[in-house]
Amino acid sequence: MDSEIPQVFQKELTCSVCLKYLIYPVTIGCGHSFCWPCFFIPWGQAQILACCPVCREPSQQGDVKNNILLKNLTSIARQAHLRQFLNSEKNICVTHQQTKKIFCEENKNLLCLLCCNPQELRAHNHPSVERAVEEYQEKLLKQIRSLREKIQVNQRNINEENKIISPWIYYVYLREELIRAEYRKLHPVLHEEENRHLDILRKENKRFLEELKKSEANMVQKKKDLREIYMELVKMSHKPYVELFQDLGDLLTRCTFMKKVFQETFSAELLFSSLKTVMSFLSPEDSCPLPTFKSESVQLHLPQPIKPALPAQTITGLIDRLKCFQVDISFENTVSSDNLKLFDDVRSLRFGHVLPDSSLNSDGINCFAAWGTESFNSGKLYWELDMKDPLDWAVGVCKDSWIARNGTVIESEDVFLLLFVKEDDDHSLLTTSPMLSHYIEKPQGRVGVFLDFESENVSFVNVAKSSLIWRYPSGSLNFPVRPFVHTGHK
Image (cartoon, rainbow, N blue to C red; front, side, top):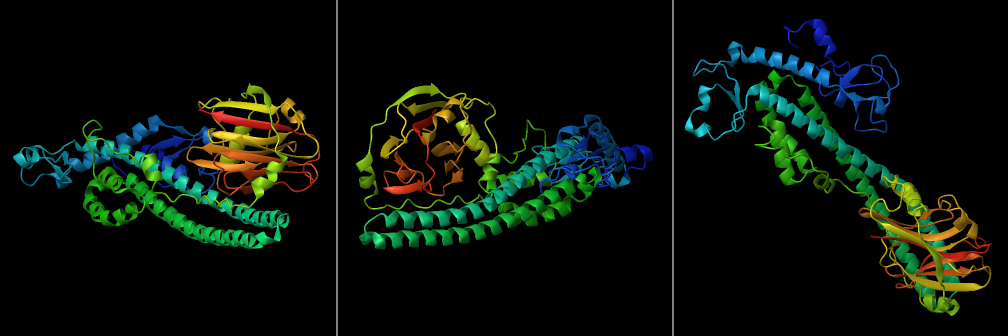
């Protein structure tokens, strides 16, 4: 640190974690301040230090504030250190015997004012040293923040994929039992078809588990690479301004290593811009803007969680058998479902958040719910509904009491629904009572609903594929129910 700056002043500008000048300082609830990269941890679950490193008081993310005053004071101290170097004999131009105060972006070296006059240098960008380093630090912070976001996205992908394993294994087991039970109702001549379905199921299970293992290894390696890059950038940001100039040649030499890591993480075009930014002091934003790590570009180069989906296997004669019990269903009481938070409930469960507005119309989707004019409590009944157009949809049956209270589907045992919910490029197919994710291809078009009060169960079928999506266990349906449909349209 700078000998001209009083020691007590230097102490106030020093981070107690890294013991260097504060960079991008933040102040927490207890009043102590730290470097932003030292306090915000991009890996692990906490994301910030659990308690203050100085007084050990618990820290909360909402209590963390950017400290502009400390940032300005630290900049003054670092600039003073830089001016000492610029005014020293080591920084005298040998040719013109003048102080070198200009940085040449193209040649990556310091120049005096007379060095900038030759014809071949006039086209180059020559910001002042003080201006260049300040802009460099601000732009480097953008890179660090963006890389931190990528680390967090990658970690979320790892967590999401890890959460799939147990439900997937359980679902495959349920699917196998479902197939066996369905074929026991059919003619023995279809025994070969049953075996073929079970063989496909086992092969898909084996293939997915193998892909999952490879994907996990890829994500863990990506996590390691991103962390190394992050630590390298943080290390660069902590360097005193003088060392940044003195070590510039070494930084450029290490560019080859950095390139290998970046190529695995970012696109080629983004790599070139990012390395140029990190390895040099940039001109002002308006003349040479820094390309930041755009979320859309980087996201494409992060390993994505595997989305397993079994193929819908045709069961010969399934639809013909069900159509023997087909009935006409009429729906009345159609309402705008602003107060029925069906899709919000599912999004909260599946994707971990709800829409910013509690209304289902908050993202431009118009949602409508309707229930049948007649309730059923006996016999066997089958009907079909076309679900090709809605963005989100739910079909099935429910108890009148559930409709009256606009209940939630998450914990309710009064509603049997098949739901399709879309979230950006992701989607989920689920059933209620209890809530269960289905790893099978989405039905395209008509969905069939079959009530069997004799066996006391409800079934959903993919009509186009003549495939069984799900059948509730016997004994589930032991009360009167009414047909229900819920759709969301742009």
